[in-house]
Image (cartoon, rainbow, N blue to C red):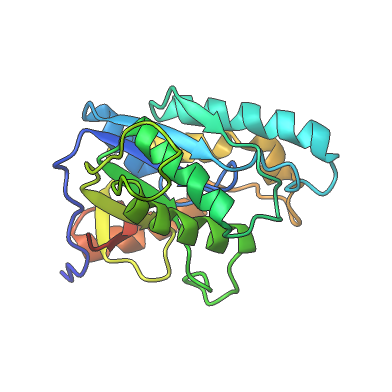
Amino acid sequence: MDTQYPFLATDWNSALVVVPHPDDIEFGAAGAVAAWTAAGKSVRYLLFTRGEAGIDGMVPEEAAKVREREQRESAAIVGVEQVEFLDYADGTIEATMDLRRTLVGALRRHRPELVVGFNHHDRYLSGRWNHPDHRATGRALLDAVGDCGNRWVHTDIGPEPWTGIRHVVIANSAQPTHAVDITDTFDLAVRSLEAHKAYLEGLNPPVTDVRGPLAALAGGVGERAGVRYAVAFEEIPR
């Protein structure tokens, strides 16, 4: 069997997952998060927006409340208790120094050993053009990982610099390199995505089947990793 994807290392205890929108984690990483928390690892979520521009038939003020609630419910399903929102405007994020500074502060505050970002490449794996929020936040995160351990950069941001990041991986990447076995947590991955009910119903066309597409994706990655179901990540060398 083709084992193109080696398994991601597990020599870490705490992770911070950083994405721009509610549902980004569930489209690609929630099964891995469930596997990690089941193994006793600490995982926290940091989201830039509340996804207020993501439901065409719902005004942003209402959508923000609904999507925050759905994200917290989704996180709880896979064992994540701490979900933080940074309140950037959905759909208009740019990779500015302000964004990078915000992320440096967050990394120094949360002090993760594993950092999980979202696809920062110009295109999705399918070849479609990537969302600008994904590109901006993903690239700013990679820059902030380099900054957070340097005490002479962003000297006005506390707390103390953090040099304990062991691994940086990108979910939903167009250039995957590693896998996480989610055979035992696949059902939790399905439930966590299904928790975004209002969002899925608001898409055009509405998404009515979550399990089928997730099984096809996870099954394909699993075949290349030698297991039934797996999630792929791109590891950025440290």
